[in-house]
Length: 360
Length: 265
Image (cartoon, rainbow over all chains, first blue to last red; front, side, top):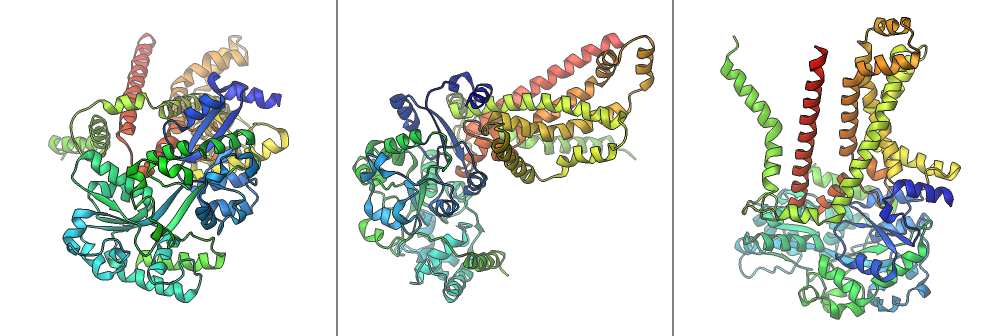
């Protein structure tokens, strides 16, 4: 222990070198409310090292190498599921969480597809993958009475063709886009059947000539600037674009919809690494986060829905009543979550996706 | 053959190529709008936001510490390596290859292998305990030393050994010779090696993101993670401050070396 203390003294600022309880928290960038961490620190006296990341892959490399030093990390659900199989995380002891009952059982059931028994993760925030568009540009091209609440906006080649000149962007994520295409075709979005995949790819290659690019983040600024008019992306990101366009006063109105056919529901999960140095602090933080008012403040700040049922009434109306953030009851039943793919399916999916992207 | 007009055009084009992007970055740091590419009026608000953002200020401070420490270590190691490479005996070719290998190795590989090394060392001898500032400094010193060696070696080759021999003839011991004769003659190379290692360390994001631990995110890591939501003008403001700082340092360095040259003449 003395060696650790010595290095800690050498390494850290005098501010954090105190022997008090510490929490090392590793989260996505721009994914928390301003007062979440200070509130926890004031209340418990725990000092928090808050670090941010931008890709599941870097986190995975660190977690698999072991002894990251982090007590709490927030990978996406599918990544967490795979890492849990590798023994990276410890099981959550729910008896240590007084506020566990606040979580929505319906949503926890959807998560169970990836995390059986909800053993390893507590949902931080949830998002959907759907179309976001520039209202004026799209109505101008498709007409007043076009159905803008449907995946046909993107997947109907006639629509895609009309929108090609103002720009369409798709996420560069084979599993998420293919799942949406399967769902639109009325097939099981988690299907690994080769015939189903062929059908989805046939649909996608029909609209391929009208797609400007495949990218997983560029569309945020492009939508806000009016450089593209339609993007299939993450709900939170598209709502950020909307916010940014409104703030800059450039007259562009962005709308995000969860289409009536349903969409993919994604989760980022709080998980405790098996070798976390301060697991007690991690439990204390999770329990603090599960308080309705704390969760609600994070949702208000980042425009993502949460799985905390008790928090919903405390979320601001602007966020809670936005059907793009909180799916209405009727749509919620049509939402689906991704399942980890078999390695074999992953290979054929990647191959089909590359063919699609390069247009060969 | 040489027309002064054509020459001037080439010079102007060259400077534009180098400085136009930096200039536009500086201009947009004074932009009112959140969108980096739309001008909507002059404002200093992003500088205000930057100074009240503890995450960025903390990361900038960590980056400067890491760069300072790793550049210093790299320069010392580079000097020793260069000494052996120029004056040493057998096995110099092998050592030369080994020392300069990080120059051509992809950063991802350096980062990942150092991460695995640190984890393994912690398991075996308990040091370094966890990942943090120390591991980033070690990693940066490793590849900084490769660059420093090349720079210092180039200078050392041109040194006249007769001067050192003369010093020894006059009764100076080997250490005295090294510190009083060799080192001053190497000084310009040491300064440029240090600056190069400092810049490279300040620049690096790949290696640092592998070997960083809790509470030790460097500035490039923080900026890079913000890119997902588009770069905010806060980053422009920060870059402008860094450019001002670096320009001042370069001017001071130039001034100091100009003054030093006078008595020599």
